[in-house]
Length: 186
Image (tube, rainbow, N blue to C red; front, side, top):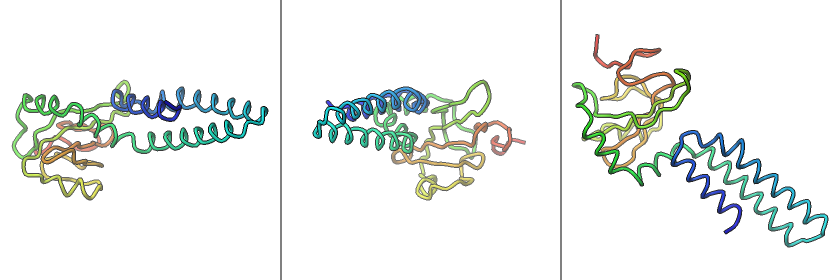
């Protein structure tokens, strides 16, 4: 198996298991792979091995392409793969969660990132039996949507009736921070 294929598998594994995949990939894995390939390219050039030069150069291009794709598409890839592998578990967890308040869609916290109360990003898994969030997912734009207590930057459709809803940084469902995400609570 080639370097690029191994890197792709490692990248996908990191993306599925941690929302912080860009840190080990950009600070450790990608630099080590690039340095190794550059050394191989120099050795191939010094030894005048054209075929090895071409192979290493192609591997280097593949590593850069995979790195770009991983960093650019990490979020939707992570959500899609997590949903593919563990949707039954997430569905069961949401069905066991307390009922939503009147006018709100049923939801659970699906992913939370941040550090020490700063720059917290939260994504909720939302069950929408009437698929009212479908147009929000298609549009890809921020907005205030029925059943969600405040404006959100991103809604993604996972499958019929199931959505991921990303809240703005430091905002959470049912809380009042910079925005009022408590819904109709006075």
